[in-house]
Image (cartoon, rainbow, N blue to C red; front, side):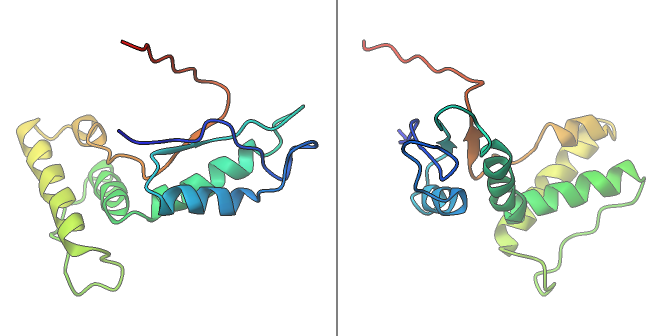
Length: 140
């Protein structure tokens, strides 16, 4: 089971803030946390920064780059080509190739439906949580 800090104050928090949002997100990613929360006092001016920092890590993931490329090509009616292991932006080739193979399989089995490939979106590296979600876990 993954651990996530749900009570974090950033440098936008008047009373308790000391942590810079980029540092907070980097630390959460380094510790393999699936999410990071922001609970600043008074206002949540740090939300845009938290979202942008999380997007940097999510969009930089090799499988996410490949998925976005595949969806864009299919929407334009282009044929998907197998990713080259020698390409400078190939990332982790095993991960990229597995994403491409899965996208191709879904594309062919769904009768060339882009929506089916869009449904195969890779999991996020880190998810921002900022007050719009509530999780209740019972003690059984």
